Image 1 (cartoon, rainbow, N blue to C red):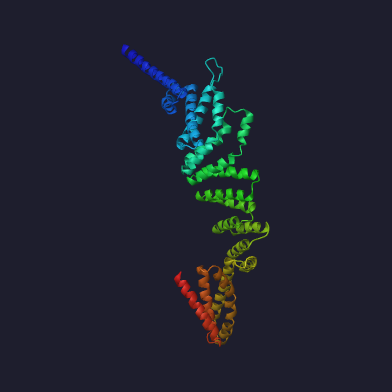
Image 2: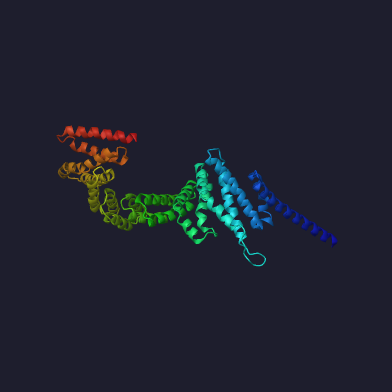
Length: 430
């Protein structure tokens, strides 16, 4: 029994001794901090063990002293920077964040009731003064990390700035001023940008969604609003969130009708799912919103063609070409429709057994193959590397060459033969 008591007594002596040592460390740190020639780095080395000790870590004095030391470390480097001297930017940034953390903990402990249940804060006024004055430093700290591509650290620094209105020790007027700080959207933007750079799409979307709402509320220029919207689409795309992307395209069609990207993307999504009715509904909405573009008419034509209504599709391809005579996609699509009709007619003609009827029908084939020709030639002129246009022109020239051959139009036959060979060579070179 005596041995046990002795062991317990020894443990108590060791514990008390350790606590006493940590209190001495706090005192030593204060002495180095307040010396005639301060030793801030030495003060930091002295205080850090006390921050994890079971006794001293529960004292407001410990954390306030640490916060003040980190503030002085930050301020010393900041003054060097102001004077054009070489400053340790990394130390500035880390000391700044540690100062904030320490002061927040110090204030929390400082507000705890004493043994009599009364709250008698000792450090709040000084804490408020220091935390208030270091606020701009977080912009520079984030900028330092961003410049060095340390994106996660940059986010942490910018988020300290954003957290200011949430600190418990501000008076209401001050809190409102902090909450309406004009720099907040800029800090949120950089948080989102850094998150995107570090492939953290979820965090990027958190900030971009906040900014999207802010930009709408502030009625920011449409260009700025759409830029933010595009950032969000990019992140949803990186997450492969097809449901969110579909919703974004729907919103984009209505918010930014001047940009055909949203309608095209939305229609393509529905076409990929073979939901032709929904695709048609949305393109009609886009067309009815105002002055329709060639792209919208072309999209509607594609949907109608998918639905099997080729005649209606033809009319909208023509509307697209009327809007934009250089629109290769619409011209190629219309040329394809006419070319397919010509091939079908040729198959029908070739199936005729009666020689007289065959010759009469074959003589009319010229019209069928001339119909797609100007559209395919123009499409090829605008997009000379598009294989589909080359293949179609090769087929058209080949058939026209055969139609004119032996029909007392040998000059035309040779002309189309030369064009056929040109397209054949292009096709083989691709």
